[in-house]
Length: 194
Image (cartoon, rainbow, N blue to C red; front, side, top):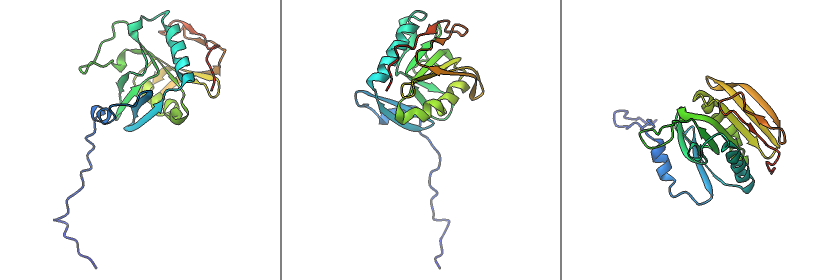
């Protein structure tokens, strides 16, 4: 039988002192053509696909009818509520008069619209943890575009960590955002499929 002197055992440090800034610094430089996000403390790095980018660009071009260029972002880090959530959303539309936080980053409180285009390896985030985080953050309009199924999913009316209104339809059916802050309709007929 082994006797252990508990007075001499050092306890492992169980505190988690990681910060989003530290984690993003570990990843620099990011390989060209890759998108990096931290979702609930987990690091995700995925390559940008041509189909993915074409849909993102199509959405941004349509949003330009309502939003000035400086209010639209793609793949720019925004920190969200919750433990270690630093997302690089596919498309973000910011409210007029949006301001930066103390670190010079866009604030999630200024977001009126987010769109995520599904990638196979990170789809669970877009449909799960990120959707819940966007709802918690009060993002009024969240659209998921899925080029694998040829469908889009409109989420509105955030409450707590969920959206109370969800509409899912096929590519070719416009996304009617006229009753939201966005105030326009997104055409989806030219969204490519994977």
